[in-house]
Image 1 (tube, rainbow, N blue to C red):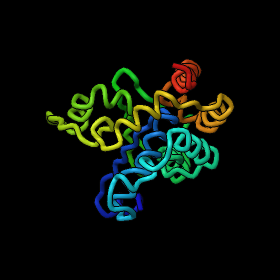
Image 2 (image 1 turned 45 degrees about the horizontal axis):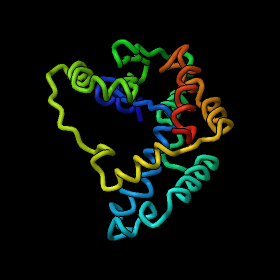
Image 3 (image 1 turned 180 degrees about the vertical axis):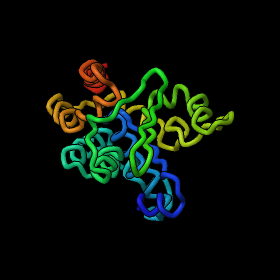
Image 4 (image 1 turned 30 degrees about the vertical axis):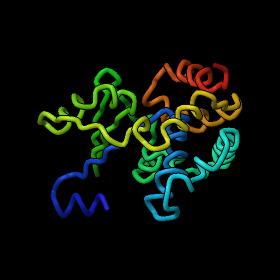
Length: 201
């Protein structure tokens, strides 16, 4: 596809990929999958019919642990990992500028724009403006705190306990990508996330 795009338009395709801390990304995907998607795709007609409303907090957390272990959530594969496979490149060949919050990787067939979720959210307008070459005004939407399941989401994240072994396995599997975006700070990040989702408040 990228070769065709290059030959037909005489310009490279630019691909944007955003990396988010794995546990936070999977929590978001869990609520999207069992909350918004069920309504948006017509599987249920009201929020009260959703698994998020009909299950206890303990049941939701058990379900999350199960899909985390089985790696079945839609958000489990990383887009950059998939792109690296498709482009036959190693994540170790990539670098990310955390100070700028964005990096451009120029390849023969396409250009990759690397973004890190937390930095993008913190400097959204500045980063988008630099990418677009014009001033971009932000109208925030699709925020978890504004969704119908926000109170459930809040309780879930503040009481969630992710077993240390599960966290270690997840980080080990995604270590190449984590090192691209966090460099030498991966272990500090993992320690922070372990503490945040230890179930101890």
